Image (tube, rainbow, N blue to C red; front, side, top):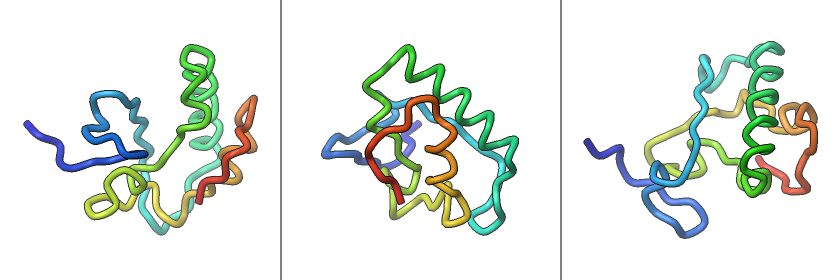
Length: 93
């Protein structure tokens, strides 16, 4: 079953080379502190195993903007990045 069109930094078929993490929520309701803490903990573990991903963290809306809106405007990228053990220099909106 095809998951639809996706593209990130010129590469298509993102499900073939990416790791997806789902959060329970909506585009408009704030995520909880517990969600941010757990997301950062999982991300730190993944970065320890795959260091290159530290500079390639993106939202679903970044790879399939026509079809996906998550994590949405309620997701606080600055707060999330501040919780990472080794925040990247890359800004994410």
